[in-house]
Amino acid sequence: MVHSWQATKYDEMFLPHLAWGDEIIAQLPLTGAETVLDAGAGTGRDALKLASRLPTGRVLALESSETMLARLREKVAASGLPVDVVDANLLEPLPVSTPVDAAMSVATFHWIHDHKALFANLAEVMKKGAPLLADCGGNGNIDRVKSAFHAVTGRDPDSGRPWNFAEPQETADHLASAGLEPLEVRLVRDTIFFYSRAEHEEFLATIVLGPQLEGYPAEERPEIVRRISRAMGDWVVDYVRLKIRAKKA
Ligand SMILES: C[S@@+](CC[C@H](N)C(=O)[O-])C[C@H]1O[C@@H](n2cnc3c(N)ncnc32)[C@H](O)[C@@H]1O
Image (cartoon, rainbow, N blue to C red; front, side, top):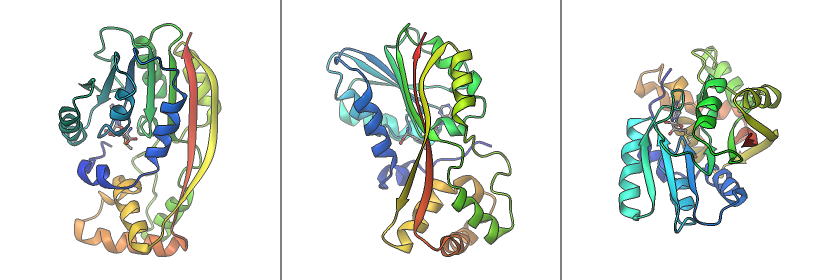
């Protein structure tokens, strides 16, 4: 299933993704001259931050969604920062001609079902010794949201395989088979809390349950989301993140 992203809304909302991205950028060993690949750059929030730390380097911002690419291009043009926007599918050999010094990714790998192919494609365009730092949804991610969705709609939230919430061990195996030495691969619970039902509902509708709601007419979606938020009881989203630190062998 290809999920259609609401780029403007995504870009305007407060997202925990910002903290996940900051954590990764802070861990990248940068001198300021590197070329760094951001895999699944979205609207470019991390790519722009990263580029501001690379006075003589560049960011290659790889993205495949038309709506995200449009917003990303606008933001890069307005910023004047050294970011090359690259229209690329991470499941195919990447259109990157010179190997990069580092690669990062935030909240993207769980949208990709074939992690073997993903890691092989990334490894192919990384220099020997280059770090890969990534965050994505891991095993157990949003289980409470999924249960509430099932209770309210009677539908299987995993129908159509919207996500790939992987385990650390299988991820480490896929990294290793792609020639990326796994240094640390672990799950971290990161539940986020909301201050109002309205915020919770907007977040569920825009960020979490996009693929499931696409199966319903637009006019029915707000009521379904309202019932899911109520069924959860708390205004939370129970994120479980898979944190990946590896390097090209
Ligand atoms: C949740 S967004 C995260 C965006 C950004 N990294 C952030 O943290 O704000 C996931 C992004 O991954 C992109 N994506 C998913 N599958 C992809 C693929 N096969 N190739 C390239 N991008 C992909 C989506 O289009 C989307 O922009």
